[in-house]
Length: 131
Image (cartoon, rainbow, N blue to C red):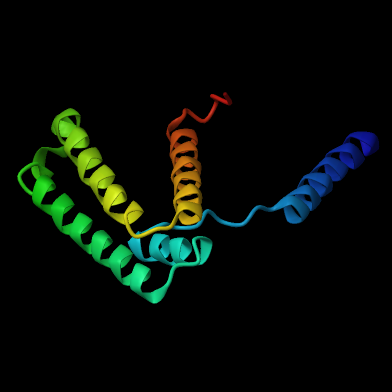
């Protein structure tokens, strides 16, 4: 009994120590403001570029609301219809943003888009699926 108690205590202490040492930071909440801030830092945007990027985010948000308004009550059943339209708005916004970026900024922007796509894809996977 003593050995079993010592084993269980050691396991519990080891588990707690592991969690304390390897605790990952909470996932950052992304919204348009934080994405704009990250783009500004990562791409070293000028003030003029940042204003254009912010206005594109504003335009995109307005367009998304207009697209979604008639579908909001039945969102789950019409996702197959709305998602291509939302994707189109997002892609159009990205094209507008790319126009104000220089070549180096464009490459970084595309890398950020790809990283975010991978993050979103991994979040959509089932918890047991570790591809």
